[in-house]
Length: 428
Ligand SMILES: [Zn+2]
Figure 1 (cartoon, rainbow, N blue to C red):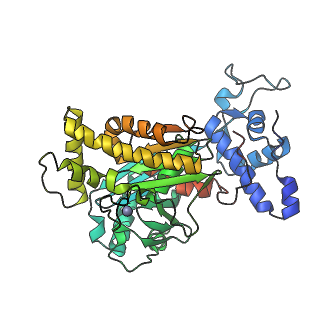
Figure 2 (spheres, rainbow, N blue to C red):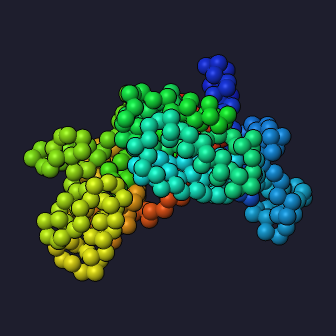
Figure 3 (cartoon, rainbow, N blue to C red):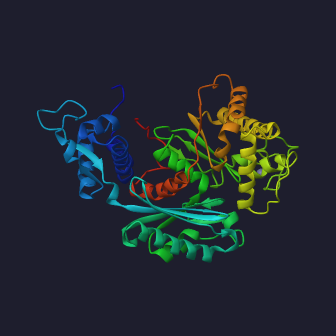
């Protein structure tokens, strides 16, 4: 009620940027239908604060494109959400999840996972290939992805012609806009930069987008998880390394050179252990899987570990022993959690986010980390912020990555005006 009408027609006339205005308004209408369906036109108007004329024009276009449809079943039913308007039956709108299909893929050092989803990022088929990707080189990885994606699409019972786009997440310094990997542990044998998005789209005949994997989780949380309706939040991923994604003012923040938010390599102790980046005292060197193992080896015998799968297996074993009551190992996790919590308190003090979401494969040990993380955040956050930022431990599923990869493509389909929408306030 107190909100001004959020119609950008006036701005459009003044700036001449009518395409942007249309994209923003369309996104808000589509996103509102996605989140609150089945929903009436009037409720869309209320939630988006757009005028009836604007909502009506956008809905007509979306109906023409078959992206949304009238929900006949609920149209005049007793479940209609609010009071009927002028005696007409309530006409409710829903998103058509099968208006488009997308493919999400995640590349990690020892695995390729591929998921085909619909427009709502609901998985239709999945394929997981255990492959030591880092040995292959870019061309072979692209070939492998091509074969895997074609197989996953066939398994979903659809054809490549129905695929609107492919989103791929991988670790490293990724320029998503240019489709280039500047550095990735998976493509480390290649001379940088690698135009990996083009290599994929050439093979598949479908547009492909690549993105840093932590950013993918951020997008997944924004679209489908704890980040919905939150314009400032932080994701911290705990696994082989420590990743971070940052949403600021409703937009994914990448940094001036696209290399920002390397939380794992922020320094917590200049005399601390050596990190994989070659420097000392990074948060990652205290809290990532290899750091847990380094400390665990000081108190228990563990088999040698030379690659990521063997490290993961050993960490799982250490986690089990700690959970079974091994006090020394419980202390290892508690110490790692304390460092992670101190780092997160620094983020809270610098950014003042609405939420910090901790996710990633490291959440297999969430119960062992959580008490010390929370205690350190509480102790080291500024008093004025203490308790105001919600800290969420999000149980890990591979689906998060897949949904994030699919979100990359969905952004395009939804015509999300990210990175140009700083002046737009989300109404919800
Ligand atoms: Zn480092």
